[in-house]
Image (cartoon, rainbow, N blue to C red):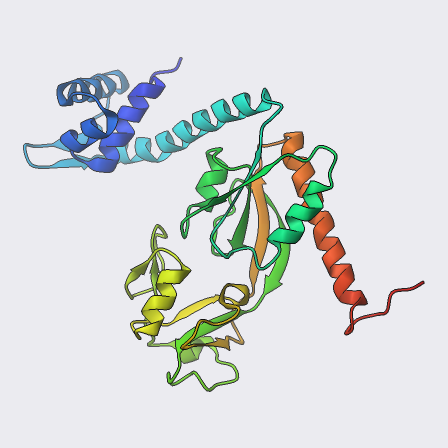
Length: 296
C-alpha cells in the first residue's frame, strides 16, 4: 500500500529544503497552517518524527533526512514517468540536448549534421545547464541526451558513450609563477587557490564560488584563483590568461549520456548518429595530412 501521496511528499520535501514553515508554504502556494497539518498527518501515518521544531528553529531528524534523500528520488521518478508518457504519445516530439555553454569540444555542429541525415530525425532543442546540474536534467526527464564531462559529472543511473578524451590544463594569469612553464604537475599546484563550483558538494576548492567558466576566467584575471579544466574549454585562452598542460592529471572525457531507463527510438536514433559522427571524425583524422592516406 502506498503510504504517502505525491502531494504530501512534495510538502515534506519543500519543508526539508527550506527548514522554515513560512518559506515552504510560500514556495508551495498554500497557507502555513495547512502545511503544518499535512506534516503532522505524514508523521502520524509513518509513525516517526520527521522534524524537530520550535518557535525559532526547524531541524530534520534522522528519519526525516532518510525520507528527504529517497523522497526526492521518488518525485523525480514520477516526474520523469509523466514526461516520458506524454512524449511517447507525441509524434512531433523534439529531442532535447543539454550541455554547459561551450561544453561540446567543437563537436556539436558535426553531431547535429550527422543526426539531421537520419530518416527519423527530429528537431533538436539545445538546453544550457549550470555547472553541475546536467545529470539532473537527464534523470528527471527535462532533457533526453546530454554532453557531460567525466569524471566531473556523476554518471550513476546513466548510459553513456565516450566521444573524446583530452588532457587538462591549468589556467593562470599572465605573469603567474607557472605561466612560463611548458607543463606542470599536480604537485606544482599545491598551495594555489582553486574554485568552489556552485552546486558541487565536497569539492576540493578553497576559493570563491563560481557558477560557470566565464565567472572562473574573471576571477583568474583578477588573480583571486587559478583553474584546471579540460583543454577544449580553454581554446583559445582568453586575453590575459595562459593555459599550461597538467602532465599527471587524469584525462577528461566528453561523453554522450542518457537515462539508462530510456529505451525510446528517439534517443537510440540520436545515439547511433552521434557514434557515426565520431567514427567519421576518427577516420578523417587518420586520412588527413598527419595520418594514413585514403586508399583508392
